[in-house]
View 1: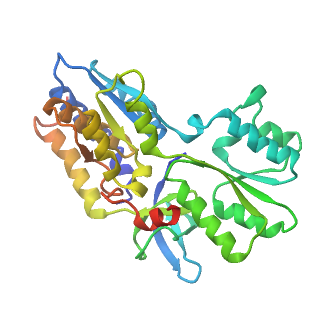
View 2: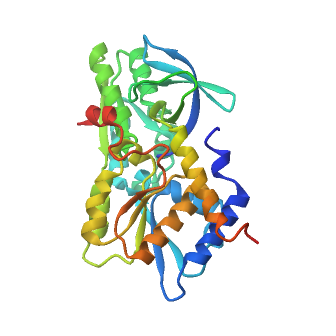
View 3: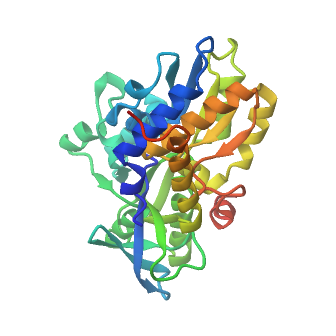
Length: 268
Length: 78
């Protein structure tokens, strides 16, 4: 088992789609908000919406840290790089995002700012080691998935005495985003959630229980592979039919109830 | 952003708390700072150069069985 192909099998997808068709009630709407951009990507890439009955609708959620980051944060990062003679390290995701005046980090780099695209905080640390006379700033963004690697880098820099490494911290929390969605001025037009995939590997499935209970919305923790998304939709549809507002975990191969305690302690 | 890929552990460097993983034949060094009790042959979820978690083969099998069940009720799809 390689944990990828098994979760993309076309025949199985057709079977789950058939099971969904059998499960839905004609008089009920099923508005499923997929929390993450990873789910949205799978829904579009594998045309999952086309396999759903007409009354099952995916509502695209807020779970892409690049999308939810205020443009002002990108402006600030850009200013750090342009005005303060630092080396700014950024994940590739942020490089092309336009901020004020539609300028991106990529354009700022083309104009001479010292901006490095990195894959890992470990790369940022190496840049700091290689450039002791320059301040190296890591532009930290992301939900709970990406926060522990930032924490590891900060600890590592402290242990090595890397005084020229610092972090422009813009990490955000998933439960807070869910709370804002559910507790907004208008009631949210969603019947169930497909809950975060890799965020939940860190925080576990437990933090979602209070939301399911308090707001009467079932939440199914869903993996990012197409069959994961479809199976989670089926589970959510069943919970809606049964009127049960609980948390179920489809992505149990990577997500436990308590999550990754070692990672949680690092960011605490 | 939160994409993570399952990869198999082929070598563990205990001194540096890192592992070499294989992603469909491509080898990559990743950090084990966020995980515990990793063994060669384990599958890890890799994100931005770190292992987020171990993948449970038993739970993966259960999920695959769940997929199969969905199709069993009325036989294969048309």
